Length: 172
Image (tube, rainbow, N blue to C red; front, side, top):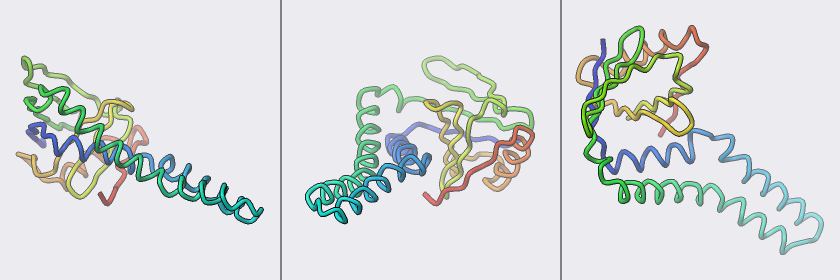
């Protein structure tokens, strides 16, 4: 069994929002800018310089807007929901499921079965376990109290394999 205890922090949530906005859906993040830059080149080739420049600026600005909206959205959420910072979650990873205990406002224990996970991402410092598009369990590797991140990676691979779900590695 692998255990972790995570106290929510504003910094952790902002990092999650940046990850979620930019890296989780790399294809969506890059598709619009690539399309805009492609249109810019077409406009420039067709002698419509003004439209070409507008498209080029939009193509470059789009990923930056997504990044900053993630950062600002994270800060706004933490400011509007200060109770978020008072929550401590305990995770117990077993071969069958993840037992999540949230202590605020009163302790609640929730089993999360591996087949319920929509996606799992691993970065240098965190695991992101998505239950759905809006709900994600953020597990910093330095919060593991029993076991190592390598053991957790191996356990997650074994548990997710029957469902044809895999851990996606990211460099963030």
